Length: 126
Image 1 (cartoon, rainbow, N blue to C red):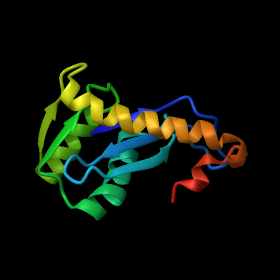
Image 2: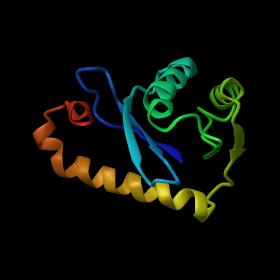
Image 3: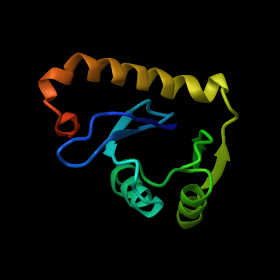
């Protein structure tokens, strides 16, 4: 499952959002600091470097219909990796709820710690 937390204060490293990726099998969540202006090639490189490196090439990927990923990113990535591409239906509880819960928890943690981060929330992700 993949989604974004957007509208965050820009960090010293230039990040302004978080790419949330949840492995449905292990339920492990990955939070990748990103910038909304990244190209699809940059997202694909980041996905391979941070997710494929840890979990291997996925056999099946479920994605929401975020316009950033429906065309360029997913089609090129699944073709390169040999995976099957399936889009979730809008507001489908089985596909949306898991990532929504993870994102809500992440947003709560960010709000609770924003004073300590002093504009560098990204430094606490690795």
